[in-house]
Image 1 (cartoon, rainbow, N blue to C red):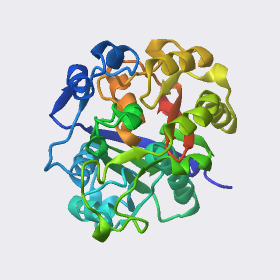
Image 2 (cartoon, rainbow, N blue to C red):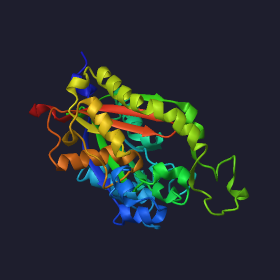
Image 3 (cartoon, rainbow, N blue to C red):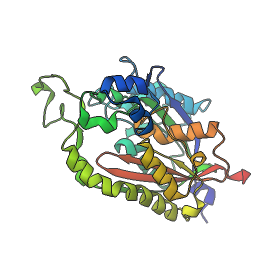
Image 4 (cartoon, rainbow, N blue to C red):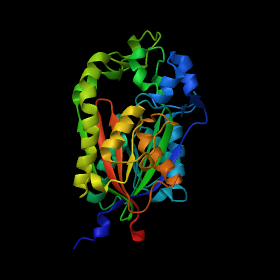
Length: 343
């Protein structure tokens, strides 16, 4: 008979890193000529952390990883997996390998998982499966960093919905057999039609670096045909968010009635409020990232970390992570929060 405990994967430690530099809603208003009230109340942004020019994705991911590990021996890690931004220190490069080396995780292999801002839910889904199918994978570090605020041209109105981008790093330690913050099930939905809309046009094989003029806006994020994207995205976004949560709960043997807490991506306040209402949650059963902005795949970890500080999470809570990444992929992972031995 299989040991049921060995079929568990728990998220035993978390860590975050946020740059010291702060940009307020007033700062963003000055850059964009958008009224500060719109940035605060509609975009839902009071401030965000922005990395300095010499602060790189690997630096932030490494700081978050060290924060998460604490006194855990990196030599006991079986894998170090980077799940953050594709905009890294170098354009074609393994950030995961550097992190493995810098941490001293000599027994771990290193690799990377990309799903843009849905990356945490996808990484949890994939890595949990890897751990349960491989007897040698018992301790896995997931870590990420993002500096995508530096890809935003505040003079480009096509990227207006990305003005909330902030920077930072986040990490979690997953351990097989740990009955703490147990990773239950994940569901993802992709609508690949949107793969053509949000991209950095320069530097890939279509527009090689050697051919670039490097004029204003070169190398920055852009939106191709924003009207088309909005026309097709707006009618499905809300339902896809609700559906990934519902299906992840169902796969976990639960329903919306069991949901106690939502750790969301950062987006405009009206959509956040509508989702809470549909899910039957109060504001204190979630954490809105108005002081952080959208930190790529770190959002849910920041929300969990801050909610735990505020006492909004308790042993036995059913927690849903909620994410979406351009392309477009929506995702939700369900976690049984706390130490199972205490409830």
